[in-house]
Length: 176
Image (cartoon, rainbow, N blue to C red; front, side):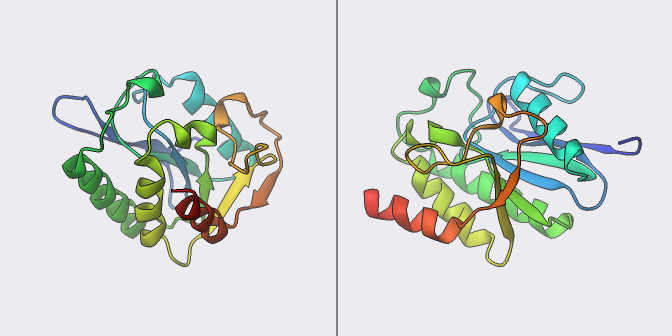
């Protein structure tokens, strides 16, 4: 990727990150659980893996968003209860991303970490509602509990598969 533009959006206090990525016109949109410390030009191991997999699959870039935008190096540090205003800001920025870029694929990449907080499945449901008509994918097999894998431990050549987000979200709703 020789020609790219950084995409980076945080809260004024930098306690939340809504987007991070670089792309041309049609990037891979990756959805994780929560952001850590990565910034443009200084990616953490998870985002290095996202960039490597996107590049290996011929995307002209990638954008990372998350189910919940609170920065935490450990998902155990996420708010015990959802901050509704923060969640709504995240949804608003996701709408902007979807309206700005020619997203062809949305990568489900939260792993089993979606179980860290009871509100995370609801966050996914709200994001899912924004993405009707988009193609959802996963890399690698599903976990034994049926979750798409987190990117951190995936190899660059991990196979890409279609991901049935509707069935997945419905299964989470039944579990709540």
